Length: 136
Picture 1 (cartoon, rainbow, N blue to C red):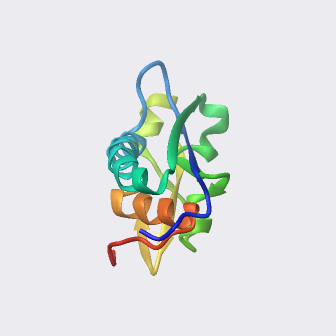
Picture 2 (picture 1 turned 45 degrees about the vertical axis):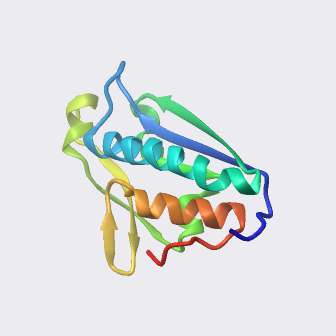
Picture 3 (picture 1 turned 90 degrees about the vertical axis):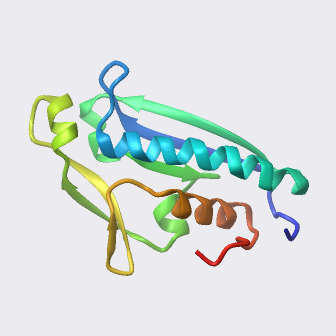
């Protein structure tokens, strides 16, 4: 690994929740994010990069921000040069008690309603200023 420009990776994951429950897409993103962070901690340790993961929960009044990931203050879609779209989310609708749309990202005409591990990892490498070892 080349030397990192940053010695910290601050990750904030924001999502809608009702009690301990969140929607399916946020749940899938959360699982991928937590697993990826554990792997990244091992990968970034030799470069001295520390990772802090913060989870911000909110109610349905802020649902447009749901499933948002920021790394060192930058939105994951900005790091990945992705677009943001709003798509119907029946799972959130059930939790919110009304029809709801949530954010999703698009890269190269591919839509991701939940953010997969490989995109989280790629964004993390970009956020700390090093090249990812994989070509994914």
